[in-house]
Image 1 (cartoon, rainbow, N blue to C red):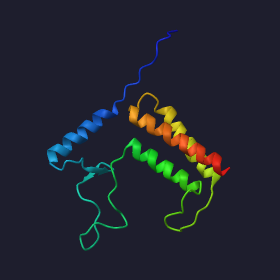
Image 2: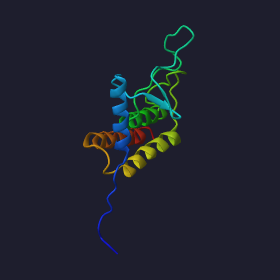
Image 3: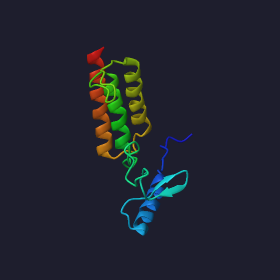
Image 4: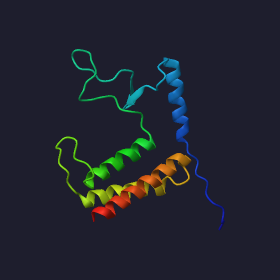
Length: 137
């Protein structure tokens, strides 16, 4: 039995480099969006040809956006601000706990693979959410 630590190699960077090469080749500056292997250079449009307000373009997927999305949903569940559609402020402790636990699991599973800024941001988000959870208990 060996006491050596296992080294995990992140192979995802290769696909990111390929997307950047495709973007440079297309001259767009941004990688083309791909859904089910079908690439699209233009956002969804309505009949008049303008962007569809019900299906706006989304930012590129990133760990920061995922953390922000989960944190926002947790704060909403903690009643920290009103729901953007209904305008109600409702406390949902179980949902908030689930979202905080999800962020903690994400922190555990990505340990050693985040940049220092991402790791610090995740620590800070978790601390703030845990303090907010205790405050409303």
